[in-house]
Image 1 (tube, rainbow, N blue to C red):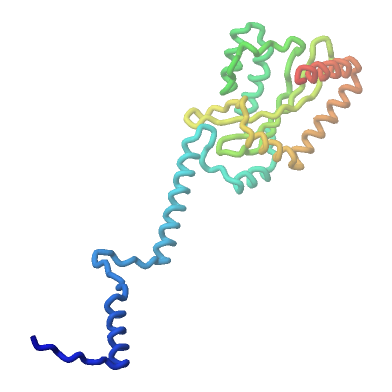
Image 2 (image 1 turned 180 degrees about the vertical axis):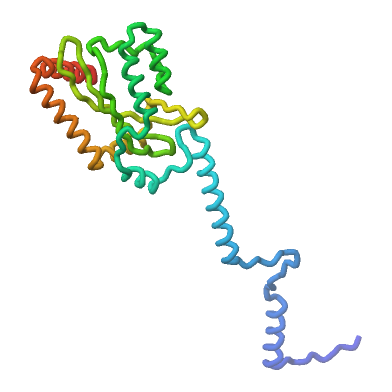
Length: 251
């Protein structure tokens, strides 16, 4: 057999071969033809989505407020401020004055059932009417005069009811002021005293009562009471004992 003569490789040829080997065994980055190209994030779409999400949340909040029991539409801070700055009006609503008169006189009815029926016609939310007792120590209420300010909601009123109380066995009447929260029923247009006052309304009444015209009214009534107590020592003694008894009940 004929042998071939071995050929010696030069250093350049060896170097070239090594480069070819490296090229063959170099790891290649494969391309996944099925992989979807990444989408570019668009800022305008992010903003639009955020706005829609915010609008959705606002709609949910509004719907919840509209259907909650003690919340009526139309209430906001601006409305409350406008109401609280309204002037105090003297006997603007005869139906409210009549309501307060009937409410006070109902406590003087002797018959329990008739008394409860009379109070039920004046108040919208009394739970246990059996707890309403006759005011045995009062002879009469007179000179009822109602001063009103708009309430925090439509068809509601803050009423400062001024009246004279004549106590049994005491000749001198004593002036007094009671604050009522009155609501008007939309369908019948009748007015009622609300007994259970929500916390936000209590705060509203407290703010309204700081108005100068209300403070003047309260101060005038207190001056009249002080003058009546100075005039009649029996009245003064009775009111002191009555206040002490009421304070003990609250404790």
